[in-house]
Length: 130
Image 1: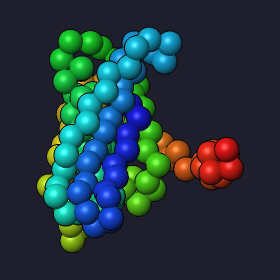
Image 2: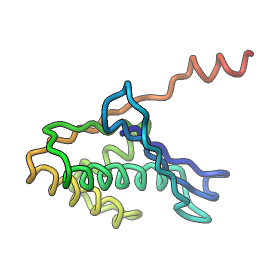
Image 3: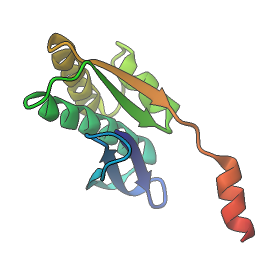
Image 4: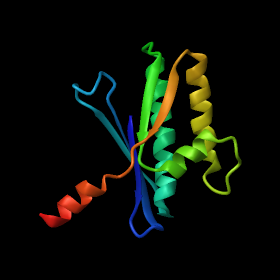
């Protein structure tokens, strides 16, 4: 699952999206997007996207057996938040929901790994130069 969160204005209208390749990268992906808040941050969108990705994986596990799953995210602070055992000042509901989904997946024998995919500055610079 590829995840992303964003906000217009930061804070501003906030959204989250997940693109899932349930049958491999060579097959058609499934896209899920949702509005998160009328006034929040891109960090909130990133946390919600991670939660939704874990939820999608949990739903898939009811019909399929898979031993490994990968969630890719470009927000290292969101990954640290869901991976730690800390109580956070904001968005704790989404963080706890992510952790519970991962726990349930582990009980089913599925190992979930979150990967940080840093933004590609070269790609952004390349678009600006065209």
